[in-house]
Length: 268
Image 1: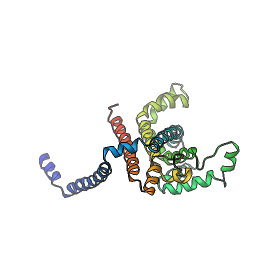
Image 2: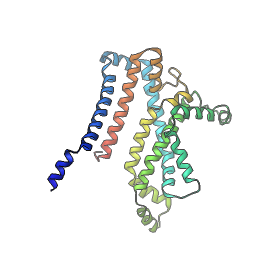
Image 3: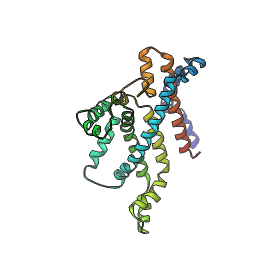
Image 4: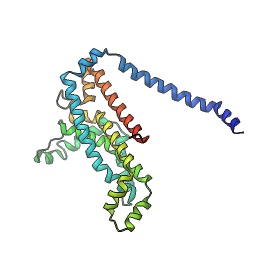
């Protein structure tokens, strides 16, 4: 009876249709990625990689994405924990607003940040402290932070939700305080989710474009991160540099997903 059921399942049109659709679009994606990889000759790719502009762009991208990732993780962990464990007025509103940047285009977020940190609102106050956000390297970090923060909160929130609060209650019953319980019980149990969140955050930061372009500007070898390099060189008609930037961004995304999958599979 069980073998008959398995045979029927294998011949199901619904099963075959869903598998066929998944293979078809995976093939299209693979074809698109492969096209990007095969356009340039190795010598052209190496020449573009070793150019002064590309080296500057890579260094600035890694530096700003690293700073943004650390900042995002420091802010998203307490935010996600509060949303997961505590009830407070306006909680639903906070969750909704935090999710907004995931729903509208990066350009809109960049424009909103430019208005916030520009001359109309926080700009004059920050400038009295010697801090300038628009059209500066700090603007890159700020834009990356607001792009990645909602994603990090969402991942860490799900992680905390999967941890049974009884473990924390047992810790509190032994006399440990809230912070001690959070540090010694909750955080170690959330290790996998925190790592996943850090990987996603870094990949999201280094690939942020629209908000970075609007807030920090696309200045040549000043606020030029990899997505901006791609954009500028397409504008100039320099396809070698543009494609090399795309290959680098794709490679970083691939390594991020690979490390995430290895960790999730328990290989680390």
